[in-house]
Amino acid sequence: MCIVVWATEHPDYSLIVANNRDEFLARAASPARWRAADDDGETGDVLCGRDTEAGGTWFGVTRAGSVAALTNFTEPASARAARPAARSRGELVSGFLHAHARDVPTAADVQAYLDRVGAHADEYGGFNLLVGTAAGVSALGYVTNRGEDKQSGTLLGTGASGGVCALSNSTLSTPWPKIGRVEALMRGVLSESATRDALVDGLFRVLADSRGPITTPAAMRETVRVEPVSLPSTADRAHFAPAAEAVRPDVPRGWYGTRTASVLLVTRGAPRRAVLVERDVYALL
Image (cartoon, rainbow, N blue to C red; front, top):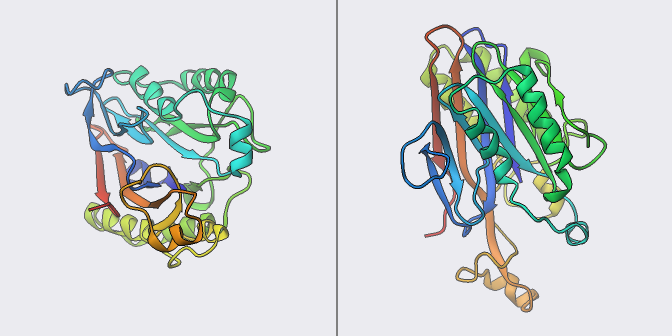
């Protein structure tokens, strides 16, 4: 489970993004930093975290203003088993960012990338992908390989009222209950925050919105921040949940929840500047 919410009509910022990464807490990852294409430790032009287990990333921005974000598409385990993924979804984000690390992609560039992803969409597990630019006027495109929205990809408008739109682990056309709430919360923060620091703090409060502990699968669709919950997994053999093991000792369990929260602000006027703040939320100790 993940969520990304963005705004494109703020008077001071051409793009504002708030993002929660929900994942198994034991999955190896490194924090956001400037990276080169080969990620060999050299400083480059792409600012992002990295999934060190499979490669790629879930969210990032470049020095030129390119931006990309990914959420997984939630589907039953039987559906995932019937369509095993050959490639890491994280490469969809890093591929776009590194391709446009130093140039500002045009609308045609964004559409071409969406088309290429669409042509190979069946090689990945279920995903939603946002790519585009925040340079001056935000131009974003969307593609998914699941649901009724499955297609080559489309360029997006400004979204809902106030230019705010959100995406979680279903498609844009079938939003989960928390989508409407997070959009409303973000619009409130945008209207009330007079300074950059106030805006950043307000957006992190939006990302911290929680409906409490997860007790049913449906509860994932209600909560923006996912409190740690034990789920079937082979990722966390060192931190099994005893109560869960007692119920199903044959199935390994792992702690899952919101690992990081990120806020991105890209100024509208020249000289354009970007601020990316990433905070840890839950981690294994």
